Structure formats: structure tokens, C-alpha cells
Figure 1 (cartoon, rainbow, N blue to C red):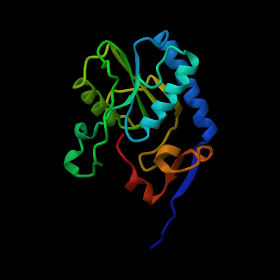
Figure 2: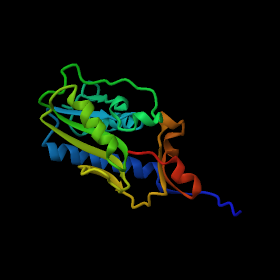
Figure 3: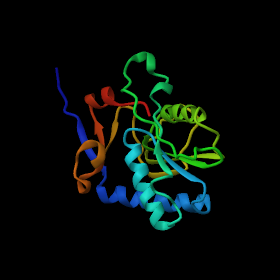
Figure 4: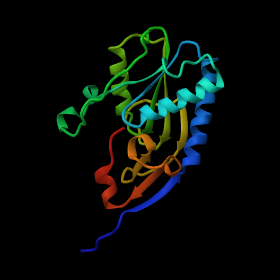
Length: 199
């Protein structure tokens, strides 16, 4: 029997991630025509620190944006369609602005967009919290292979992949790497397909 070793390549460096988030922040302000009524909600796990970073960038672009009060998190664990498989992590806190989300423009933030099922679950979770005026989606990476009719409004990088490949984002807040060592990696090989998640 021939054993092959998974091959991993870096497709985004720490500086690439930083530039992508800066561009996304400017796109959000331009699309929204300012920051009034804007709320950022990160999807755990890596969407949360990405939302925090975007909030900081938005406040530097427009000091009227409240990087503390208008940034939160949206846990989607109990809304996933794979609950019966038992492969779901423990729920994490959902934190929304004290004023709620009614009438706001909510930007959902995630690290990798894949099948679209995570975002569908996020929309279901959001509907239980209020009625925003509009919902947008910003992702660091769009790897394709959508299974639902969803697309991101703001994308850091489009990375064509096969279903057998695994895309992983390494962030300081979640993965314990140094900030200047953050990266987006693609793993190819037999271990990749067994580790790939549904996003």
C-alpha cells in the first residue's frame, strides 16, 4: 500500500490578511454610505476576532462607528442542519448590541465561505433576535462549492479549491500563533477531505 503525505501550501500571509480586512472595511463603509445603523456580528469561532478587527478599522475610517457597542457575535450551533450527526461543538455566547438589531444593517462575518450552510444557520439564528433592515455577508475566504443560493457581499480572497482540499485560517486569537505568523492554508491529500468542515 502506498501512503501519501498531505501537502500544505500557504495562500495568504499575515500581511495579506491585514490588507484584505482593510479593503473589506472600506467596502462596507462605501456600500453602507457611512456607519450609522451598522452592526457587525462574527460567527464563532474565527469570525468573532475578524469582526473585532473590522470594527477597529471601521472606527478609524469613521470615528462615528462604535467599535465596542456595534460589534458582537452570533452563535449558530443550535441552528445547524448537521446536529443529528453529533459532530457539533459546544455553543458559544451570542452577543448583540444593547439596542438590538431591529432596523440596522447587520454584516455577518466569517472566515471561510464554503457550502453556505453555516450562513443559512446564521440567518435563522438572526431571525430569532430581531428584524434588521438588511443583512450583508463578509468573509475572509470564498472557496466555492456552494450548496445553497448564497454569496458574500465582501470577500478578502477568492480561492478556487476542490472538495478534497481543506482550507484553514490561523488567527492569533483562536489558534495561538503570533500575529505576524497568521495565515490561510490549503491542505491537499488523504487527510484533507476527512477534516474538511461544512461552512
